[in-house]
Amino acid sequence: MKRAFTLIEVVISIAIFSIIAIYMYQAINTMQKSNDISSLRYEDDTKEQKIVKLFYNDLFLQTDIYAVSNITNSEEFDVFRLRTKNSIHAMINPHVTYFVKDDSLYRIESREFEDIPLTYDAVERVKVDKLMENVTLFRIYESRSSYLISYQSKEKFTIFQVSLPQIPANSNNSI
Image: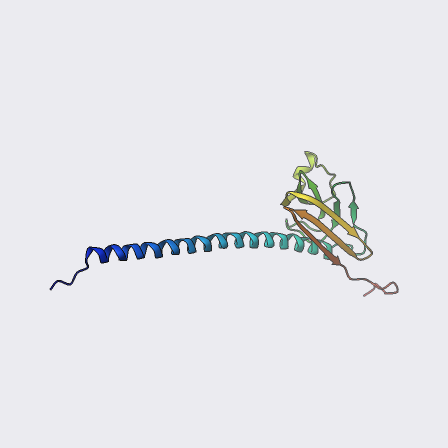
């Protein structure tokens, strides 16, 4: 007696294997799409967290933390200028300017404050970083010792507050 599969048994097993393979492909495809979406969200959150951290570092490391920063309000977007010890381009106490141009938020580091828009002569003296695109809102509000920063990009609205330490009015600044 031969021990072999009949043609019907082989066809049935191939059909069952095909059905299982189709479901497995769909499950793997769905998992891959879900992975892609979550990794894009993670990249966006990481990028946004980097921008918020950059604002925090610039504000907390101002060279004169108790001086008034220069905020220029316009109808569309604010321009924010300060001097800080925070540099991402290895400059010593750079002047930093945040501004929006062509729906993109930029950060400029330079040795001196530069006028916006930049001139051709200023290009060699500054380092420009594009922080985000599709910016529809960029506003900064300043109170005595805190800043409220808000921006909107890709229909995602972000708002956060940076509160700086206060020096009591009767404190002695000598060491």
